[in-house]
Image (cartoon, rainbow, N blue to C red):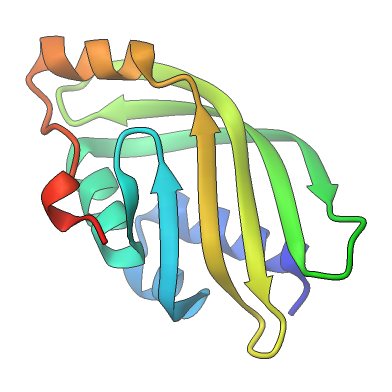
Length: 136
């Protein structure tokens, strides 16, 4: 499966909160790094995300493929997260995926965005904090 197709399947599964579908897109030892969570497993990242959000709306204005041999793809995103408290917060950033071409799955996902507004919002709303106890 091509990396762009994997990204589309991931975004579809994410919008549906379909953890089973998400798991099929990642290798068993995959790692996700994000400002709020740090480096965690696919399961930990999505359990935290799903428990703290009611839904997400995403736009992807740009998809950038690597010009080097290793398989990677980066997507610019604009997310609106509808937090479990009922409030909404916007995030803009990029998600970089590394693909294990031998199995056609993601082996690493790095999410890059300015977390200051989200952290402040989470602190004020009493939303569960970082998942450092579940970190790798």
